[in-house]
Image 1: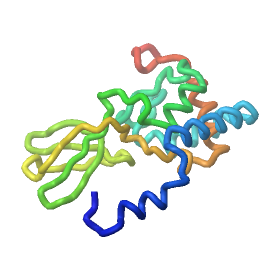
Image 2 (image 1 turned 90 degrees about the vertical axis):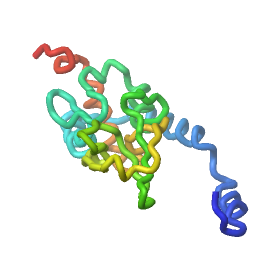
Image 3 (image 1 turned 60 degrees about the vertical axis):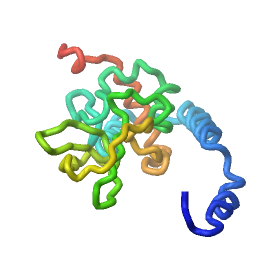
Image 4 (image 1 turned 90 degrees about the horizontal axis):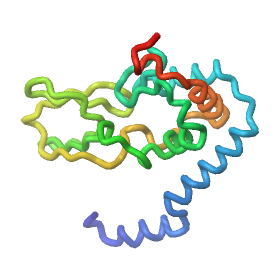
Length: 183
């Protein structure tokens, strides 16, 4: 809420013709579903997209970082569920991977996945998988969000054709070898 005069009217005017967020995401997922079915998937290219875009936070087949959920066996979810998970990451957030929202005493706002506390330090992972170390005595407010720390704009970060390759690669991941310890 802002104290600027007329700001609420201006925001309402600027957003009046925008579809509700759920409708926009539903249309995007429907469009990508059709595009995926019509595409020629290159699994090797999908692996490259994963390593460039996702491996900073996700581990798959022994590669990547385990900040977000481990993705071994992810292909068992199917294309529709994977599209929802990727394009609307806050739709089904496991509480173990919910974002932590912090306000520091000096007014900084920080968001990330709370990884651990090391003595008097809270270690957060930001959206790029980088660790942030915040002294506990500098935290003014701390709350758990219902939002995923995964970027909500993957459709902007990954070209559409690369998204299809990525999805094809993820669908190939049917065995949870590393998650179960069987190699």
